[in-house]
Length: 519
Image (cartoon, rainbow, N blue to C red; front, side, top):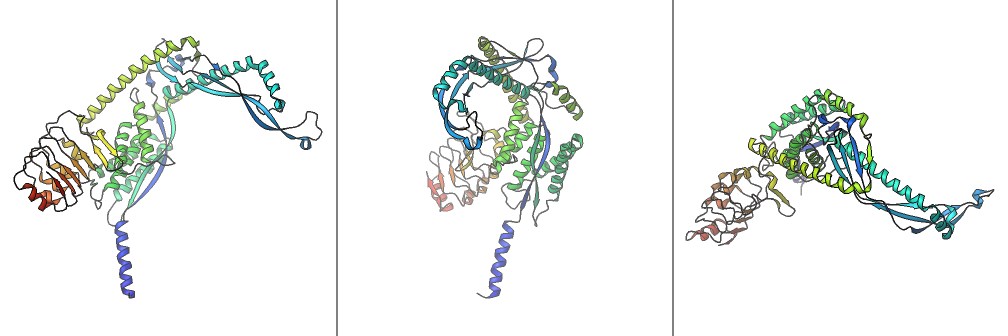
């Protein structure tokens, strides 16, 4: 091969590589101060009146278990400790002790329950005589334990009480006080010699400035910069085309935009919007966890926790100065609420009270979440079928449209917005038509519309170029559109149970010569 031909081959390889890898996405991370609101509405709390009732079961001390170890020991009256040191076998006891799960209830000045929680059962052990040269004889250890047993067991009970008191105090802190954290969040810049991403990169710079201002406690300016960046990202999503790799806002960039908006929304305290965008990012790209906590799965988990915790409280004050004031007012009481330890016999009573409180709270949370979701669906902000998308590890995404056997009069148009779907399985739901919008689901590999009452397929069915399996069994189809021949990757077509016109199967075999047709 001549030099010119080699040069031409190398040039082709270079051009292919440049075309394939032209898009470069850089992930940057920012560190900001994030304030998480308490579980209980802070406005309603008078911290100086609160106290904690704590109950736990009797502390049971188990039988001591003999252990052996080796110790470096020196005779008591040794003149040369280094020379006289010897290794001797010694003994000690491992003494187990336990108490059943406890309950803590926070009450206000009128004795009303403000918050309650269960505390995990205690199962622990303590050493007696460990690493003491005195116990090279087992008999000496046994004798000393018999003498000190009563006092040692009492110290274990005191240790248990300290454990429950410490846990109760920490649980109260998480429920009643603002949590101030340092948060790591990502933002992205984009490089491509063929496309202009100056708007997105300018938004990324605004986000960087906004996060920096928030970290410097300049909340108003930081939030303003961040919201302007989010407006640019949302505008870019309007032109998103996840099915076209060559689009300016393709699948990868769409996922990164959702991730950027979700992270910013979480920092701004809007956990609902954060969860919505981070779920979309997770579905569109690989689920990623990172050591620094900036992976989409890490962010999503934190946003979900904060959304769940924010349902029954007043959230964060609108003005940063109000937030700083509330934190300052509450801080002297953090970790210092008085704890009243009740007798073990009060455990059942406190547990019953905790149960009533949590059941009522759960019911209110569920009702609030349902109302919030219904309002978002009614406003068009949330796709009602988004939550029904399930991920399967082998074939991709699957949509369970409605719990069987609920019937639908027509195929839901909102499903056409779920462009990430690889599978769409909606058998036996009774709808009689499929709209042209189905052509938007160009990622589909599997489509199951069996057991419905479909009389005609739209011509847009031919746009599903990636479709491999199509199940139309048990419908009312007599003829399929000519555009079905555009399904160049279709390998399986099921048509059993349809009143097909004479010669229809033969026509379809000519349109789909590489497809196995079952009728």
